[in-house]
Image (cartoon, rainbow, N blue to C red; front, side, top):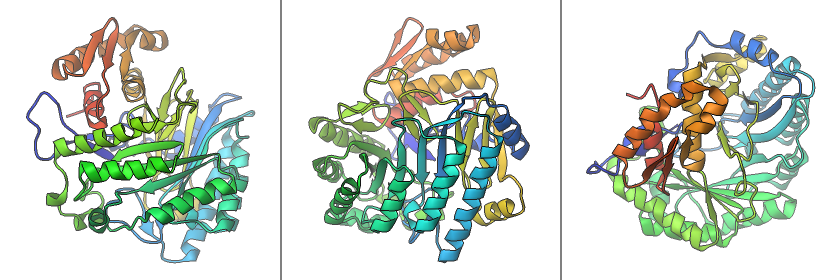
Length: 441
Protein backbone atom coordinates (compact mmCIF):
# COMPACT_ATOMS: atom_id res chain seq x y z
CA UNK A 1 0.00 0.00 0.00
CA UNK A 2 1.30 3.47 -0.83
CA UNK A 3 0.40 6.99 0.14
CA UNK A 4 1.51 10.34 -1.21
CA UNK A 5 3.53 12.97 0.61
CA UNK A 6 5.24 16.31 0.07
CA UNK A 7 7.96 18.15 1.98
CA UNK A 8 6.61 21.40 3.51
CA UNK A 9 9.83 23.31 2.93
CA UNK A 10 9.55 23.05 -0.86
CA UNK A 11 7.06 24.41 -3.37
CA UNK A 12 4.51 21.57 -3.53
CA UNK A 13 4.11 19.82 -6.88
CA UNK A 14 0.70 19.31 -8.40
CA UNK A 15 1.00 15.62 -7.55
CA UNK A 16 2.71 14.29 -4.45
CA UNK A 17 5.65 11.90 -4.34
CA UNK A 18 4.72 8.32 -3.53
CA UNK A 19 6.18 7.06 -0.27
CA UNK A 20 5.44 3.80 1.53
CA UNK A 21 2.81 3.42 4.23
CA UNK A 22 5.45 1.46 6.20
CA UNK A 23 3.15 -1.36 7.28
CA UNK A 24 6.41 -3.34 7.20
CA UNK A 25 10.08 -2.36 7.27
CA UNK A 26 11.73 -3.10 4.94
CA UNK A 27 8.70 -2.70 2.70
CA UNK A 28 7.17 -5.62 0.82
CA UNK A 29 8.74 -4.33 -2.41
CA UNK A 30 12.07 -5.58 -1.01
CA UNK A 31 10.89 -9.07 -0.09
CA UNK A 32 12.85 -11.88 -1.78
CA UNK A 33 11.85 -15.23 -3.22
CA UNK A 34 14.63 -17.08 -1.36
CA UNK A 35 12.81 -16.44 1.95
CA UNK A 36 9.55 -18.37 1.85
CA UNK A 37 7.91 -21.54 3.08
CA UNK A 38 11.01 -23.09 4.68
CA UNK A 39 11.71 -19.90 6.62
CA UNK A 40 8.10 -19.64 7.75
CA UNK A 41 8.09 -23.22 9.04
CA UNK A 42 11.41 -22.85 10.88
CA UNK A 43 10.63 -19.44 12.33
CA UNK A 44 7.19 -20.51 13.53
CA UNK A 45 8.57 -23.67 15.14
CA UNK A 46 11.19 -21.57 16.96
CA UNK A 47 8.62 -19.41 18.77
CA UNK A 48 8.88 -19.80 22.56
CA UNK A 49 6.22 -21.34 24.81
CA UNK A 50 3.61 -18.80 25.89
CA UNK A 51 4.09 -16.69 22.77
CA UNK A 52 1.69 -13.74 22.35
CA UNK A 53 0.26 -13.54 18.83
CA UNK A 54 -1.96 -11.51 16.55
CA UNK A 55 -3.74 -13.08 13.56
CA UNK A 56 -4.94 -11.38 10.39
CA UNK A 57 -7.09 -13.28 7.89
CA UNK A 58 -7.44 -11.97 4.33
CA UNK A 59 -10.68 -12.61 2.40
CA UNK A 60 -10.05 -11.01 -1.02
CA UNK A 61 -13.56 -11.32 -2.51
CA UNK A 62 -16.12 -8.59 -3.14
CA UNK A 63 -19.57 -8.72 -4.74
CA UNK A 64 -18.53 -5.79 -6.92
CA UNK A 65 -15.26 -3.93 -7.39
CA UNK A 66 -14.86 -0.22 -6.66
CA UNK A 67 -12.77 2.02 -8.92
CA UNK A 68 -10.85 3.58 -6.01
CA UNK A 69 -9.68 0.37 -4.31
CA UNK A 70 -6.00 -0.61 -4.48
CA UNK A 71 -6.27 -3.65 -2.19
CA UNK A 72 -5.66 -7.17 -3.48
CA UNK A 73 -9.31 -8.01 -4.15
CA UNK A 74 -11.36 -9.65 -6.87
CA UNK A 75 -14.99 -10.10 -7.76
CA UNK A 76 -16.44 -13.37 -6.53
CA UNK A 77 -17.41 -15.45 -9.57
CA UNK A 78 -19.42 -18.01 -7.61
CA UNK A 79 -20.33 -19.17 -4.11
CA UNK A 80 -18.21 -22.26 -4.73
CA UNK A 81 -15.11 -20.15 -5.33
CA UNK A 82 -15.59 -18.38 -2.00
CA UNK A 83 -16.24 -21.64 -0.16
CA UNK A 84 -13.14 -23.29 -1.63
CA UNK A 85 -11.01 -20.34 -0.56
CA UNK A 86 -12.47 -20.42 2.97
CA UNK A 87 -11.62 -24.14 3.24
CA UNK A 88 -8.03 -23.37 2.19
CA UNK A 89 -7.86 -20.60 4.79
CA UNK A 90 -9.00 -22.99 7.53
CA UNK A 91 -6.41 -25.56 6.44
CA UNK A 92 -3.60 -23.01 6.48
CA UNK A 93 -4.51 -21.87 10.00
CA UNK A 94 -4.67 -25.46 11.26
CA UNK A 95 -1.25 -26.29 9.77
CA UNK A 96 0.39 -23.27 11.36
CA UNK A 97 -1.30 -24.06 14.68
CA UNK A 98 0.36 -27.48 14.72
CA UNK A 99 3.79 -25.79 14.59
CA UNK A 100 3.12 -23.44 17.51
CA UNK A 101 4.51 -24.07 21.00
CA UNK A 102 2.33 -24.71 24.02
CA UNK A 103 0.57 -21.81 25.70
CA UNK A 104 0.19 -19.46 22.72
CA UNK A 105 -2.32 -16.63 23.21
CA UNK A 106 -4.11 -14.44 20.66
CA UNK A 107 -3.87 -10.76 21.60
CA UNK A 108 -5.68 -9.44 18.49
CA UNK A 109 -7.55 -10.80 15.46
CA UNK A 110 -8.63 -9.13 12.23
CA UNK A 111 -10.81 -10.49 9.43
CA UNK A 112 -10.03 -8.19 6.52
CA UNK A 113 -11.01 -7.90 2.89
CA UNK A 114 -12.27 -7.51 0.37
CA UNK A 115 -15.60 -8.13 2.04
CA UNK A 116 -15.34 -10.83 4.75
CA UNK A 117 -19.11 -10.67 5.17
CA UNK A 118 -19.37 -12.47 1.82
CA UNK A 119 -18.47 -15.68 3.69
CA UNK A 120 -21.34 -18.09 4.36
CA UNK A 121 -22.25 -18.84 7.97
CA UNK A 122 -20.69 -22.31 7.90
CA UNK A 123 -17.37 -20.90 6.68
CA UNK A 124 -17.37 -18.21 9.38
CA UNK A 125 -17.89 -20.84 12.07
CA UNK A 126 -15.16 -23.04 10.61
CA UNK A 127 -12.73 -20.12 10.68
CA UNK A 128 -13.62 -19.44 14.32
CA UNK A 129 -12.92 -23.07 15.21
CA UNK A 130 -9.58 -22.95 13.39
CA UNK A 131 -8.56 -19.76 15.18
CA UNK A 132 -9.16 -21.55 18.48
CA UNK A 133 -6.40 -23.99 17.52
CA UNK A 134 -3.89 -21.10 17.48
CA UNK A 135 -4.68 -20.28 21.11
CA UNK A 136 -7.33 -18.65 23.26
CA UNK A 137 -8.27 -15.01 22.86
CA UNK A 138 -6.77 -12.95 25.66
CA UNK A 139 -9.30 -11.10 27.85
CA UNK A 140 -10.28 -7.87 26.10
CA UNK A 141 -8.48 -8.82 22.89
CA UNK A 142 -9.80 -6.86 19.90
CA UNK A 143 -11.34 -8.93 17.09
CA UNK A 144 -12.11 -6.63 14.18
CA UNK A 145 -14.12 -7.52 11.08
CA UNK A 146 -14.58 -5.34 8.00
CA UNK A 147 -18.32 -4.84 7.49
CA UNK A 148 -20.10 -3.60 4.36
CA UNK A 149 -21.58 -0.16 5.08
CA UNK A 150 -25.01 -0.95 3.62
CA UNK A 151 -25.71 -3.86 5.88
CA UNK A 152 -25.00 -7.50 6.72
CA UNK A 153 -27.52 -10.35 6.95
CA UNK A 154 -28.28 -10.95 10.62
CA UNK A 155 -27.30 -14.64 10.47
CA UNK A 156 -23.81 -13.72 9.27
CA UNK A 157 -23.51 -10.96 11.83
CA UNK A 158 -24.52 -13.38 14.60
CA UNK A 159 -22.00 -15.92 13.30
CA UNK A 160 -19.21 -13.33 13.40
CA UNK A 161 -20.12 -12.33 16.93
CA UNK A 162 -20.24 -16.01 17.82
CA UNK A 163 -16.60 -16.54 16.85
CA UNK A 164 -15.45 -13.54 18.88
CA UNK A 165 -15.94 -10.36 16.83
CA UNK A 166 -15.71 -7.30 19.09
CA UNK A 167 -15.30 -4.53 16.50
CA UNK A 168 -17.17 -3.80 13.26
CA UNK A 169 -14.99 -1.80 10.84
CA UNK A 170 -17.01 0.08 8.22
CA UNK A 171 -15.44 1.75 5.18
CA UNK A 172 -16.81 5.11 4.07
CA UNK A 173 -16.23 7.36 1.10
CA UNK A 174 -17.34 10.94 0.71
CA UNK A 175 -21.09 11.57 1.02
CA UNK A 176 -21.01 14.04 -1.89
CA UNK A 177 -22.81 12.45 -4.90
CA UNK A 178 -20.21 13.69 -7.39
CA UNK A 179 -17.42 11.98 -5.43
CA UNK A 180 -19.39 8.73 -5.20
CA UNK A 181 -19.96 8.80 -8.94
CA UNK A 182 -16.25 9.35 -9.54
CA UNK A 183 -15.14 6.39 -7.38
CA UNK A 184 -17.88 4.01 -8.47
CA UNK A 185 -19.42 3.32 -5.08
CA UNK A 186 -22.63 4.52 -3.48
CA UNK A 187 -22.68 5.47 0.20
CA UNK A 188 -26.08 6.24 1.65
CA UNK A 189 -26.00 7.83 5.06
CA UNK A 190 -29.30 6.29 6.16
CA UNK A 191 -28.17 2.77 5.33
CA UNK A 192 -24.71 3.26 6.88
CA UNK A 193 -26.37 4.59 10.05
CA UNK A 194 -28.70 1.57 10.10
CA UNK A 195 -25.70 -0.76 9.78
CA UNK A 196 -24.01 0.87 12.77
CA UNK A 197 -27.23 0.57 14.77
CA UNK A 198 -27.59 -3.08 13.75
CA UNK A 199 -24.10 -4.15 14.78
CA UNK A 200 -24.46 -2.37 18.10
CA UNK A 201 -27.83 -3.96 18.76
CA UNK A 202 -26.40 -7.37 17.91
CA UNK A 203 -23.72 -6.95 20.57
CA UNK A 204 -20.55 -5.58 18.95
CA UNK A 205 -18.48 -3.84 21.61
CA UNK A 206 -17.01 -1.27 19.25
CA UNK A 207 -17.72 0.35 15.89
CA UNK A 208 -14.96 1.85 13.76
CA UNK A 209 -15.34 3.92 10.59
CA UNK A 210 -12.58 4.32 7.99
CA UNK A 211 -13.05 7.44 5.82
CA UNK A 212 -11.06 8.17 2.64
CA UNK A 213 -9.66 11.58 1.75
CA UNK A 214 -7.87 12.70 -1.40
CA UNK A 215 -10.62 11.30 -3.65
CA UNK A 216 -11.51 12.62 -7.11
CA UNK A 217 -13.80 15.68 -7.05
CA UNK A 218 -13.54 15.78 -3.27
CA UNK A 219 -13.14 19.10 -1.46
CA UNK A 220 -12.17 20.01 2.07
CA UNK A 221 -15.77 21.05 2.67
CA UNK A 222 -17.25 17.77 1.43
CA UNK A 223 -14.76 15.75 3.46
CA UNK A 224 -15.45 17.79 6.59
CA UNK A 225 -19.19 17.25 6.09
CA UNK A 226 -18.62 13.50 5.73
CA UNK A 227 -16.55 13.43 8.92
CA UNK A 228 -19.22 15.42 10.75
CA UNK A 229 -21.91 12.95 9.62
CA UNK A 230 -19.78 10.04 10.81
CA UNK A 231 -19.04 11.67 14.16
CA UNK A 232 -22.77 12.31 14.70
CA UNK A 233 -23.26 8.52 14.70
CA UNK A 234 -20.67 8.29 17.53
CA UNK A 235 -18.47 5.43 16.33
CA UNK A 236 -15.77 4.50 18.83
CA UNK A 237 -12.92 4.96 16.36
CA UNK A 238 -12.53 6.87 13.10
CA UNK A 239 -9.56 6.50 10.76
CA UNK A 240 -8.79 9.08 8.06
CA UNK A 241 -7.08 7.17 5.26
CA UNK A 242 -5.49 8.80 2.24
CA UNK A 243 -6.52 7.51 -1.17
CA UNK A 244 -3.56 6.03 -3.06
CA UNK A 245 -3.70 6.42 -6.84
CA UNK A 246 -1.59 3.54 -8.19
CA UNK A 247 -3.20 2.52 -11.51
CA UNK A 248 -0.08 0.58 -12.54
CA UNK A 249 -0.78 -1.73 -9.56
CA UNK A 250 -4.59 -1.58 -9.44
CA UNK A 251 -5.88 -1.51 -13.02
CA UNK A 252 -9.42 -0.60 -11.93
CA UNK A 253 -8.07 2.83 -10.92
CA UNK A 254 -7.56 3.62 -14.61
CA UNK A 255 -11.25 4.52 -14.53
CA UNK A 256 -10.29 7.55 -12.41
CA UNK A 257 -8.69 10.36 -14.45
CA UNK A 258 -5.69 11.75 -12.60
CA UNK A 259 -6.88 15.25 -13.52
CA UNK A 260 -9.86 14.74 -11.19
CA UNK A 261 -7.64 14.13 -8.16
CA UNK A 262 -6.91 16.87 -5.62
CA UNK A 263 -3.41 18.28 -5.69
CA UNK A 264 -0.89 17.89 -2.87
CA UNK A 265 -1.87 20.95 -0.81
CA UNK A 266 -5.56 20.09 -1.17
CA UNK A 267 -5.03 16.59 0.22
CA UNK A 268 -3.42 18.09 3.31
CA UNK A 269 -6.38 20.48 3.61
CA UNK A 270 -8.80 17.55 3.42
CA UNK A 271 -7.09 15.74 6.28
CA UNK A 272 -6.79 18.87 8.41
CA UNK A 273 -10.46 19.74 7.84
CA UNK A 274 -11.54 16.26 8.90
CA UNK A 275 -9.22 16.21 11.91
CA UNK A 276 -10.60 19.56 13.09
CA UNK A 277 -14.18 18.28 12.85
CA UNK A 278 -13.33 15.16 14.84
CA UNK A 279 -11.45 17.13 17.50
CA UNK A 280 -14.47 19.41 17.92
CA UNK A 281 -16.64 16.30 18.32
CA UNK A 282 -14.47 15.10 21.21
CA UNK A 283 -12.23 12.58 19.47
CA UNK A 284 -8.56 12.22 20.47
CA UNK A 285 -5.83 11.79 17.85
CA UNK A 286 -3.80 8.59 18.20
CA UNK A 287 -0.90 7.65 15.99
CA UNK A 288 -0.73 8.86 12.43
CA UNK A 289 -4.39 8.88 11.35
CA UNK A 290 -6.62 7.37 14.06
CA UNK A 291 -9.19 9.27 16.17
CA UNK A 292 -10.76 7.66 19.24
CA UNK A 293 -13.07 8.38 22.15
CA UNK A 294 -11.29 9.72 25.26
CA UNK A 295 -11.79 6.47 27.18
CA UNK A 296 -10.28 4.27 24.46
CA UNK A 297 -7.44 2.03 25.77
CA UNK A 298 -5.13 3.31 23.03
CA UNK A 299 -5.22 6.84 24.52
CA UNK A 300 -3.38 5.79 27.67
CA UNK A 301 -1.21 3.11 26.03
CA UNK A 302 2.31 3.31 27.43
CA UNK A 303 3.73 1.37 24.46
CA UNK A 304 1.51 2.02 21.44
CA UNK A 305 2.33 -0.22 18.50
CA UNK A 306 1.32 -0.44 14.85
CA UNK A 307 1.81 -3.97 13.55
CA UNK A 308 0.63 -5.12 10.10
CA UNK A 309 -2.50 -3.00 10.27
CA UNK A 310 -3.19 -3.38 13.99
CA UNK A 311 -3.14 -0.56 16.50
CA UNK A 312 -2.13 -2.24 19.78
CA UNK A 313 -1.68 -0.94 23.31
CA UNK A 314 1.33 -3.27 23.73
CA UNK A 315 3.50 -5.30 21.34
CA UNK A 316 2.93 -8.91 20.35
CA UNK A 317 5.71 -11.44 19.83
CA UNK A 318 4.58 -12.41 16.33
CA UNK A 319 1.88 -11.36 13.85
CA UNK A 320 0.50 -14.22 11.77
CA UNK A 321 -1.08 -13.57 8.37
CA UNK A 322 -3.36 -16.07 6.63
CA UNK A 323 -4.76 -16.07 3.12
CA UNK A 324 -3.59 -14.93 -0.32
CA UNK A 325 -1.00 -12.11 -0.22
CA UNK A 326 -1.05 -11.98 3.59
CA UNK A 327 2.11 -11.08 5.50
CA UNK A 328 3.41 -12.64 8.71
CA UNK A 329 5.95 -11.02 11.02
CA UNK A 330 8.03 -13.40 13.09
CA UNK A 331 11.01 -12.52 15.29
CA UNK A 332 13.43 -13.47 12.51
CA UNK A 333 11.68 -11.62 9.68
CA UNK A 334 8.69 -11.36 7.34
CA UNK A 335 7.07 -13.90 5.03
CA UNK A 336 4.29 -13.27 2.50
CA UNK A 337 1.90 -15.74 0.91
CA UNK A 338 1.50 -16.09 -2.82
CA UNK A 339 -0.78 -13.29 -4.02
CA UNK A 340 -2.91 -14.97 -6.69
CA UNK A 341 -5.99 -16.57 -5.14
CA UNK A 342 -6.06 -19.65 -7.37
CA UNK A 343 -2.39 -20.34 -6.74
CA UNK A 344 -2.97 -19.99 -3.00
CA UNK A 345 -5.83 -22.51 -3.01
CA UNK A 346 -3.82 -24.90 -5.21
CA UNK A 347 -0.80 -24.80 -2.89
CA UNK A 348 -2.92 -25.57 0.13
CA UNK A 349 -4.66 -28.42 -1.70
CA UNK A 350 -1.28 -29.89 -2.66
CA UNK A 351 -0.14 -29.84 0.97
CA UNK A 352 2.37 -27.06 0.37
CA UNK A 353 2.94 -23.93 2.44
CA UNK A 354 1.70 -20.87 0.52
CA UNK A 355 4.53 -18.55 1.63
CA UNK A 356 6.41 -17.44 -1.47
CA UNK A 357 8.64 -14.50 -0.50
CA UNK A 358 9.90 -12.64 2.53
CA UNK A 359 12.74 -10.85 4.25
CA UNK A 360 15.06 -11.88 7.07
CA UNK A 361 15.74 -8.99 9.45
CA UNK A 362 19.20 -7.82 10.46
CA UNK A 363 20.06 -5.46 13.28
CA UNK A 364 19.87 -2.35 11.11
CA UNK A 365 16.43 -3.37 9.83
CA UNK A 366 15.17 -3.79 13.40
CA UNK A 367 16.54 -0.46 14.59
CA UNK A 368 15.24 1.53 11.63
CA UNK A 369 11.92 -0.30 11.63
CA UNK A 370 11.35 0.48 15.30
CA UNK A 371 12.33 4.14 14.76
CA UNK A 372 9.76 4.41 11.96
CA UNK A 373 7.14 2.76 14.17
CA UNK A 374 7.84 5.33 16.91
CA UNK A 375 7.27 8.13 14.41
CA UNK A 376 3.98 6.73 13.16
CA UNK A 377 2.70 5.91 16.65
CA UNK A 378 4.04 8.70 18.88
CA UNK A 379 5.52 11.35 16.53
CA UNK A 380 8.93 10.91 18.13
CA UNK A 381 12.17 8.95 17.88
CA UNK A 382 13.70 8.07 21.25
CA UNK A 383 17.25 6.88 20.62
CA UNK A 384 17.80 6.12 24.31
CA UNK A 385 14.88 3.67 24.17
CA UNK A 386 16.30 2.17 20.99
CA UNK A 387 19.67 1.75 22.71
CA UNK A 388 18.05 -0.05 25.64
CA UNK A 389 16.67 -2.60 23.17
CA UNK A 390 19.33 -2.79 20.46
CA UNK A 391 22.56 -1.48 22.00
CA UNK A 392 24.96 1.18 20.75
CA UNK A 393 24.08 0.56 17.09
CA UNK A 394 20.83 2.42 17.71
CA UNK A 395 22.74 5.69 17.55
CA UNK A 396 23.15 5.11 13.82
CA UNK A 397 19.73 6.80 13.35
CA UNK A 398 20.94 10.12 14.77
CA UNK A 399 21.98 11.43 11.32
CA UNK A 400 18.44 10.77 10.09
CA UNK A 401 17.09 12.76 13.06
CA UNK A 402 19.31 15.68 12.08
CA UNK A 403 18.26 15.39 8.43
CA UNK A 404 14.60 15.47 9.44
CA UNK A 405 15.14 18.65 11.45
CA UNK A 406 16.85 20.34 8.50
CA UNK A 407 14.24 19.31 5.96
CA UNK A 408 11.12 19.84 8.09
CA UNK A 409 12.00 22.69 10.46
CA UNK A 410 8.34 23.71 10.81
CA UNK A 411 7.36 20.46 12.54
CA UNK A 412 10.53 18.64 13.68
CA UNK A 413 12.34 19.55 16.90
CA UNK A 414 15.61 17.91 17.88
CA UNK A 415 15.75 16.79 21.52
CA UNK A 416 18.49 14.99 23.45
CA UNK A 417 18.71 11.51 21.95
CA UNK A 418 16.14 11.94 19.23
CA UNK A 419 13.39 14.13 17.85
CA UNK A 420 9.79 15.20 18.39
CA UNK A 421 7.31 16.01 15.62
CA UNK A 422 4.45 18.47 15.98
CA UNK A 423 0.98 17.38 14.80
CA UNK A 424 1.09 17.10 11.00
CA UNK A 425 -0.81 15.37 8.17
CA UNK A 426 0.06 11.69 7.67
CA UNK A 427 1.85 12.45 4.41
CA UNK A 428 4.40 14.57 6.26
CA UNK A 429 5.00 11.93 8.93
CA UNK A 430 5.58 9.29 6.26
CA UNK A 431 7.95 11.61 4.43
CA UNK A 432 9.91 12.01 7.67
CA UNK A 433 9.84 8.23 8.15
CA UNK A 434 11.38 7.89 4.70
CA UNK A 435 14.51 9.64 5.97
CA UNK A 436 15.04 6.65 8.31
CA UNK A 437 14.60 4.19 5.43
CA UNK A 438 17.99 2.87 4.35
CA UNK A 439 16.45 1.62 1.09
CA UNK A 440 14.64 4.79 0.03
CA UNK A 441 15.72 6.08 -3.34
